[in-house]
Length: 96
Image: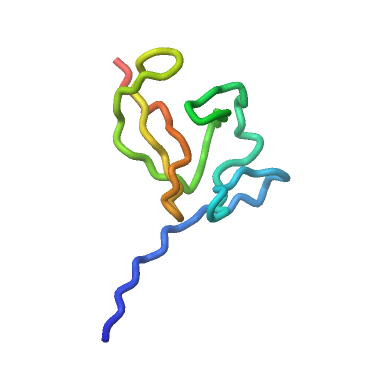
């Protein structure tokens, strides 16, 4: 019997910060406290945080959604380790 295992996704380890944010399910590191821009956002399921930079996340396709501030293009992000949906991001747009 041959077992084929899924290769593990490389995880970035954030060790240069006294405080970091991690996935609630698998504890994979997501962001340093220094990359936190704001805690003043409100999502559909409660408080939302805005970060300058994150690691160990995957991104879904961009789609139009009605948010509290109107219609926006957003893409869901998930933990690369356990695939838990973490939130969403504004996708990069090409500059004209």
